[in-house]
Amino acid sequence: MALMTGEQYIESIRKMKMQVYMFGKKVENPVDDPILRPALNSVRMTYDLAQKPEYQELMTVISPETGERINRFTHIHRSTEDLRNKVKMQRLLGQQTAACFQRCVGMDAFNAVYSTTYEIDQKYGTSYHENFKKFMLRVQSGDLTVDGAMTDPKGDRSKAPHQQEDPDLFLRVVERRPDGIVVRGAKMHQTGILNSHEVIVMPTISMGPEDKDYAVSFAVPVDTQGIYMIIGRQSCDTRKREGSELDVGNSEFGGVEALTVFDNVFVPNDRIFLNGETEFAGMMVERFAGYHRQSYGGCKVGVGDVLIGAAALAADYNGCAKASHIKDKLIEMTHLNETLYCCGIACSAEGHPTASGNYMIDLLLANVCKQNVTRFPYEIVRLAEDIAGGLMVTAPSEADFRDPKLGPVIDKYLKAAPGVTTENRLRVLRLIENLCLGTAAVGYRTESMHGAGSPQAQRIMIARQGNLAMKKELAKKLAHIKEN
Ligand code: SF4
Ligand code: FE
Image (cartoon, rainbow, N blue to C red; front, side, top):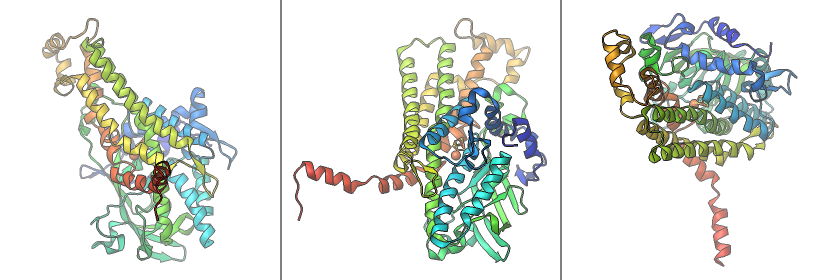
């Protein structure tokens, strides 16, 4: 079975025995929890769309490894076309869910670990690449969802992993055994981990020789003994428990992040992809971050499409769609959104093969892409709120709207453009609220800032890749400057 249906995916997650905590309690049935289910539905969409003939080309590929049709989320990119299709697929999913659909972190980890393990083996004669390929085949043939776990808690930011007062603030090897290793630590902000079958752990920063125990990468099933997750709160999350679909804004889809603890987790030898080769930690980080910064030129653009559409609808419903300043704001939102898409496509089109044969994006352009993502969605949100009007945050609840006495009053005073129902007006405003400052704002707004690395991380890469020396030479040549 190389492609699971959405239903099969849900049932496969249901069978897993994950340790999930929320609001101080263990969640016995995360799959059916009203707060968590919308995030699972978003990942499900990566399976549902892969079943549809019209999306087959974007959502699936024939695996060069197995010869079977597989989901693109489990694919190793083999061309710049693959890289572009990845971005297009992410835009499509953003449009369909208006949320973080989570599965990209695994895809990006897949491609980063694939090429890095190849290069480690070349240098050291290790068998990490073979280990990874074995794991990859399992994921491809089972159509598994994989989480990519990179961000450590990091403690005192001025100190290296081995200098931390608490040695667990970066995930590390605490025991080496003949059959494998035991690891301890935590990974922060784990997108979709409880909706994943497997997790690929990677280091979070470049490391020196003294950080040997911290330079570790491996994959384990998410319900491995010792792994537990503490769900991150999202703004307005408990609205999902109230039973009002209207007040949630986007009741079907969402995203989820969890603080994930690895409490003495055993990793067998054949699932280890890096173990002490400190100089390769930076390569793995840089490649994963590069791919994930490319990803944002797809997913955030798709969600942006929904927000632009919602703002335009709100303008229609308010009766002000023809106002020139509204039209101009919608143009500005579109311009910003498409600029992000240009960056996502450009860094893909300029991709190149790595030593292992898979394709890497252009790192400079991918970092520029993500740097723009730290800004433009904020401006798009600002313009959406401008167009939506204050009612977006002052509208009464659905319970009041359905109340026999209050409902007609709300209906009378919230009427706007002719032929537009108050209910539809409320629905689109709640969707905008959800995207700008509700549960989806985690994925669209703040994640745009910090996901795939905070803005300064991209500026460091831009400084490294920007080739100032070459640019100075250009200037010197034209100005006929001769230096001794
Ligand atoms: Fe995918 Fe975007 Fe979510 Fe990252 S933030 S997992 S790229 S949808
Ligand atoms: Fe992300």
